[in-house]
Image 1 (cartoon, helix red, strand yellow):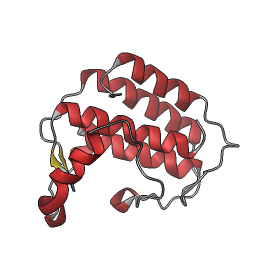
Image 2: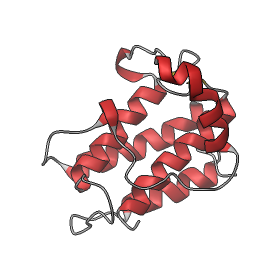
Image 3: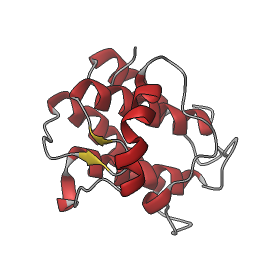
Image 4: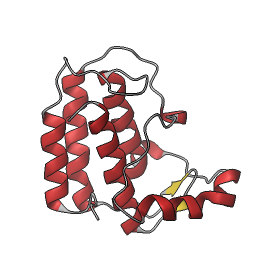
Length: 149
């Protein structure tokens, strides 16, 4: 199972991020390249514990989150297309994609020293480090596949 905590997997993601270009268009979903990249950098800040996020599991997550998480991390199945971005939806249409790319690459590298014991996913709830590693990889892979990277 691929995990963000594996050096080779991080390098694979960094290479794929580096291959993104302004000409890339989404194969599904509503985000353009900048919005996808910004979505990923904001989301990674959340997981990594940057910018003092408040972590709290939602009620529906409390009811169904653990079961959904189990299904998410049990095998190599990718995240389904057209999942809602929720609070991580990016309204800005344009921005500096090269800057976002560099931030994203730095964040991927930062997972080497991951330590955020306070992290609680808003739906899945408290997650084991192994679950976080698989989920983060799947989320990054999902958006890179969205743009054919």
